[in-house]
Figure 1 (cartoon, rainbow, N blue to C red):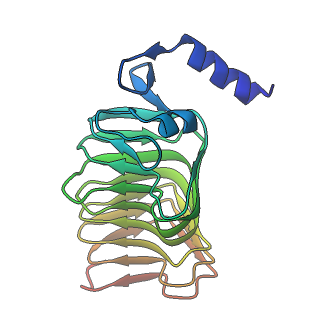
Figure 2: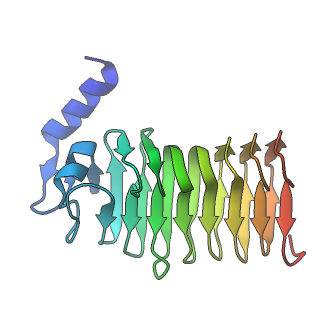
Length: 212
């Protein structure tokens, strides 16, 4: 057994199981591939994908997630949600979105992991206040699709179409965009700081308003 597998087994063996929810440890609810297939991660979550997050709070991946064709990975249907990928990977096989936040919800954070292989977006959150931190996204149509006040920090989008598409008051810092087939950053307004652009086919940064 690998050190990582042993660590996961130890976590799962010592965590608290809350009825009708994912396993929980240190105040975070754990999401595994097996839990996704079983359903009941939060109230209203049905077996299989997407995993529906219907309650505010903090969630942590404890395994990779392998998303089937024409499905989403995680579907956020609540405000004030943090998804810690915990170094794990959400992979799609002609799937749609890695993480999708329904339009009426905001203040969602996705951090620390890998998302790859989706026909639409790696992360989509058209409400306000989406934060993406230390996430590597590749082989998707659009890396990150956000609404107003999107923040992208220390992340990378590569081998995709568009890198980031967002609305007003976007903030992108310490991030990398490489080998994308279209515009790396497309925004209505915002700032881009300390980020790198390499071998993208389209513009590095484009704005519909000229306010970048």
